[in-house]
Length: 210
Image (cartoon, rainbow, N blue to C red; front, side):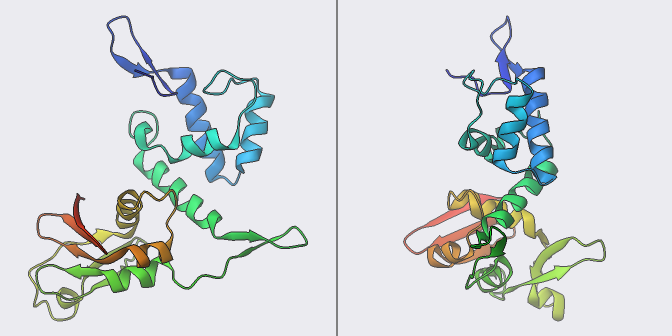
């Protein structure tokens, strides 16, 4: 069995955290969230003579990107909050394109996560759409529109938008949230009483626990 970077096997055959590599992983996540690029991270790691996961002196961008996308480090090495924040940052950066003068601009896109989810999230209890709500704290959640407007639905579950996006990305095997791919792949997402999302694909149906 190949042991992932950041872990090791102790004398008893138990997989445990490798502290030095764990610190490298934590640094990579923090630096990326602070604005460092994949190339910049590679140069930084090489300048500090930190070996890559394969033991090489040079770090490839693909290796760093793979680390940033891996959820296996939650929660032993990084927190879920840090992991989620990095996934949103990756999604935001993926929506950039390079201008001829070297600057960046947002790619033209037909859909964003907000309006895609508005059309897909359905309450399994009453059949109403889910509504996007921004709380006073700044947290964005989704709730049944009937529950919000008329309290005529017994479905009181509020779901954090970041949790929905992570589940959708996992369901569709996306490294970053691609709204148009979501639109083309899913008919609807049912929100059930038992805190599950039921994904109705164009050709199949699956369930994910929140």
